[in-house]
Image (tube, rainbow, N blue to C red; front, side, top):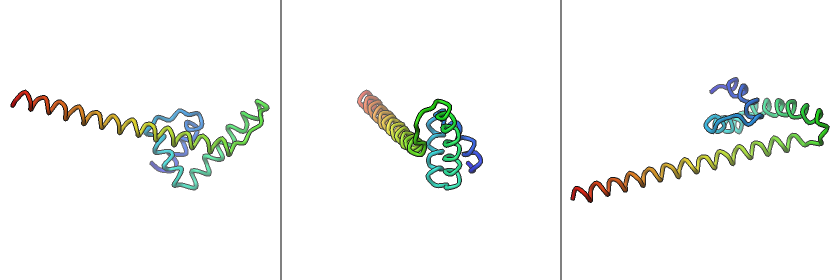
Length: 106
């Protein structure tokens, strides 16, 4: 994906609407592209800052953005772990079935 495509995903990231594969690509890109990261910071500060001002709440938006990025990283790690676990279980099931078939044939 190009930078423009990632920039279009920023509002969905802010609203926590990205699916796992898109979130993973988005976070990887944000960690490598300073321009897109800057755009993320700007959009987050504007979007969340206006909401906080309307609500009258105190806020530290940079800390909140950092927390959201960390949470996204955790979500990616958890999903990756489950995908690996699923793959291991599939391999074990295939081996078990192959063993049963061989046992029956022998």
